[in-house]
Image (cartoon, one colour):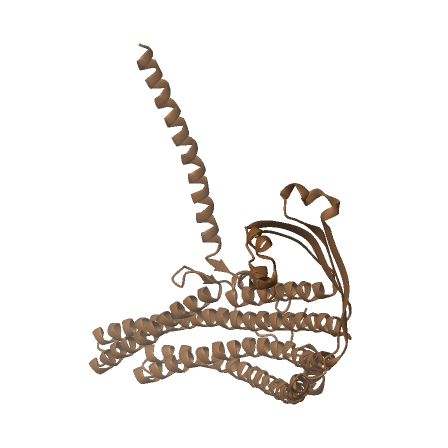
Length: 466
């Protein structure tokens, strides 16, 4: 009876443990599923925030900043005392006196009494060294490391800006592809409805068979465009998932619209000045120029005087019990002075490299500034072109819609042909596609112009110059 009771209690315990692990697992699975569902629909702002959090290029740039912070601590340590605790235990046998040239002159009785045996030597000590004067070498190295940290920060800004621009472009690629799918489906629907009208008129004897055949061909010709549009959606979704470090095949919906907002800033000179002030690449090249100047100072210090203080205090004894006896203490303090006299041209070689690097940095800065001005002009011209395209295509869409409605009505009353309706459908589809492309070009052009000026590619988001 006891065995049965114990067995039942054990079974209940196992069941309670299993259920206790099952329900948290269910809650965790449900939370994960909800998180995944929430991630299926993103705004462009959410996509940018997610990319800046997870994109590998951004993470690598941030790790480089951390590495430079460690480098600064390393260089700064050169100006601080270096303290070490050293200890040795030595067992040795040294027959040096037996090999002495005067050993044979020692009386034979005394010489025979000498024997070489092994001995122990134990030693421990605290050593330190402190640079007293380095001709500015350590201070220059610290300033150089801090400059490089600032430069790596600019590199991080550049990477974040580029990732932001790429996310904006890919996000609106997905939006554009989805809108084109809608246009293609509407075109197919229009042609199918027209085919129904043609067939009904043909059955009533008011249309010819050739009209039916043309309408059927027209419907079939609209299908490849729909297939291409749907394929473009899949490709754009995979590209955006890649930027967000997600599975390329994961479901994702771009939540937003292609909206037109006229660009107000048209002063080319003001935009160019802002770009030269904010662009991380320009700041990076200016830092390289200052770094080259410090490298030249660092090279000059190679041939100058250096003074160090070094010391050692510890115990050295043959017997371990004497290691705490102050009579066996050993210490030393020294001032070490060094002045290079001849280094085989090493210093002059370093100076030559630093001067050449400075010239290269200045030439690169001039080149990049000229290129940035060119980019500003090109981006402004591109957004102006997109503005005019949007204005023109908006009117074209309204006119094409009216023409199609008129042709469809005329066809019902025998005042138009199937070819007239097909031409009107194609014109409307083309006008709507051109409008979508114009809106896309305007949005991307505005994002690129902001990027060229060193701003975030999308207002109110991260990815700009800090």
